[in-house]
Length: 464
Ligand SMILES: O=c1[nH]c(=O)c2nc[nH]c2[nH]1
Image (tube, rainbow, N blue to C red; front, top):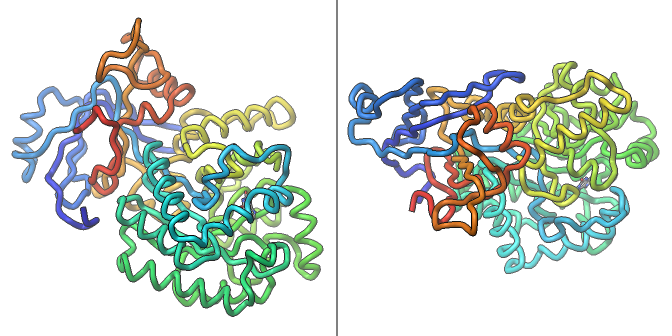
């Protein structure tokens, strides 16, 4: 279905849960959320006893569809602020490597092979299906240096209805192998421009897909290349994504490659790459002055805890970054990260914060409420969609997932009865159900997913 084709007004009936602030969730037991024919939330009602009354009193909803959640709740779609679609086949493959040798051993060979259209079609279609199945309604994607297959990823997101920022990766230094690098600064610029133009041609209003300028990271780009990309961002108003201060040897490498820069952050700042539309992934090893500069420029942070642990980059001081007032979302960072699930990233963010609390930083523990905020409203602010998605308010678009929690049945699973690894017994409060989902849930609990009111994923038994 075309992204802007009208849909039937629908009332989403039953419990809903969303963040109202960093530390608070609203848990509404008997909700009714009306979504109009454009996919926008028209009303949000609480303590609903009878859906017929809701239909009668809301103009345009007398004939509305009703989608009811039983044994679960509606939750905002997840926002993955940093992931590499092109590394998906490597998910789980990282061995004992750390960032710089991991790139050479696993990442560049895989990415370079995605010049092939048929392989890219298979990998990207699969990854979009996989992330949707985990409730990811928006993703900031890295593709590869290849324009045709980067554009293909944007086509796939648009046709599947997943919101996406799609980036053609730029890298022109000999950190990358000869078989996989931009041959010149000019090519990095012109290929980036070509991909921006294409993505804007298929979705001129950027309702579902938008381009994002993607210098891989400072060691992959010459300062001229970075400056060209900063100027391109200014000219086109496009978003920017890159990596920063992920591991210590990388920080040392940047200092040696850019000896006149004050810091890693300064390399990007000098090139005009730190803007309110910039997403900086990792940010594990930043100094105080760097944090101040990032804040002053309004750039955003993608916290990628699974990846930071898997390739042993470090423990990002998220509590301190939040206290400094930075805007933060979560990123799966496949395939440094080993899971395409933002729910998994919520758990990993909590664990990393607790390991920090047990070692040095007592007050660093993140709560369930806080990570769910980062996964939704925080992520929305990171990708510049905070006015449109991330929570359930009138005027926001219906990007949502239906979560169902069922106990494991004795002797097997009767048709339509069993979803996932969360056992509920009927006496849990809604708050307890949410906690249990965060710690033991997975994609089996995500039985349906919508973007702008359109169904983009469902399990076989639901909403057939
Ligand atoms: O986690 C990461 N994944 C990458 O692909 C990458 N490239 C530079 N720095 C990186 N970090």
